Amino acid sequence: MTEDKLAVLIDADNVPYSNVKEMLAEIAKNGTPTIKRIYADWTKSTVSGWKNVLLENAITPIQQYSYTTGKNSSDSALIIDAMDILYSGKVNGFCIVSSDSDFTRLATRLREAGMTVIGFGEKKTPQPFISACDKFIYLEILKTVAAESKATTKPIAKPKKKEPISKVDSETIRIITESVNDLADETGWTFLGSLGNYILKKKPDFDPRNYGFTKLLPLIKDIKKFDIDERDSGVNNIRHIYLKQK
Image (tube, rainbow, N blue to C red; front, top):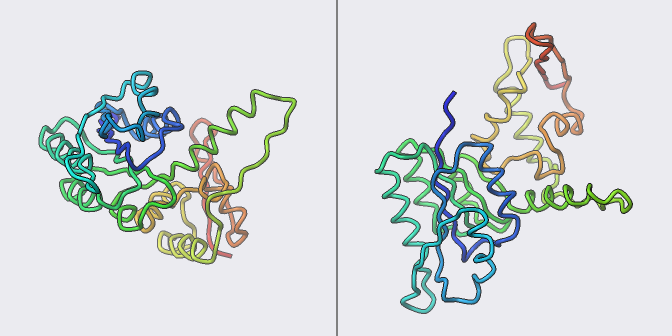
């Protein structure tokens, strides 16, 4: 199976520079980042923190001067490059890293062209941009993973468990329950492997890590509204997990 080739385009003005390695590792789970570019007016001190991580992570800085006050010219440069890359035919998908809603139309246009669009941004990202992506990942959950990984190297001090960035509320339970019922076979059972992708179609920012769980199954178990059945697949002791509403 051939991995998707991804163009990673970063808006340096609207995302923090911390945990870049974790972000690129997350991107690598979805494909191969063949193009990595970051956009900013590098003469400004506000983006100076990014300069230390660009060479280490092989990200190409694109200089875009701010010609007028109050206008983000980096947005325009990123959008123009994205369209050039789209028509070059060199990639299968895009990762747009920004917390800015200005890229909503770009994400929509790329998806219209058959591209997979994965968004990365902070929890403050406006909903229109999130909804325009196939999948949206909050940078805060990557920070949590990075902090926990570092803490495990210090066995003496027990790490404090960070609060999840979202709570499992009634809306989350409703979406999961409806999705389970939508995918259920004639006996009422739903294959867990199909559930996550189906929920993403309804809610692009759905991720078990948002709620403090590493995978979907522990989240499902915590809700306590579903029966769970583990079935032997007959191949290399692999078990398939099915669930249905109680």
